Length: 141
Image: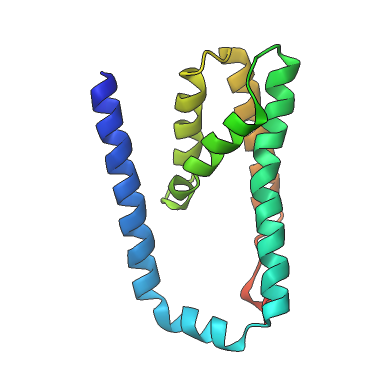
């Protein structure tokens, strides 16, 4: 079973990379245009906020899991999160959550702790998308 899951994980990574390359190739003229008219100082600010956002979910998970007496380090949670970022870009938007739940369950984290973490993340992301807080290309120009 573990061998099958490892092969599926590798296949999942390959599918994610193929999807990202395909999207890039289809939209390359738009991407070139965006970089041609982009303010690099604003791009740096957007990248900074993106990095801060990446650290937010593991920080919330760390607080939730530590509160429930799970012995996991922030570094481990950050590593799990960073290793699963690519899967976030696959259609469906739940693949990253599934992959992280699988990783955390292999670390003997309580099922209740994982469930509460996923619930908090779902509420956070639902609120974020519901309020149309996705940055637009106008932010960079």
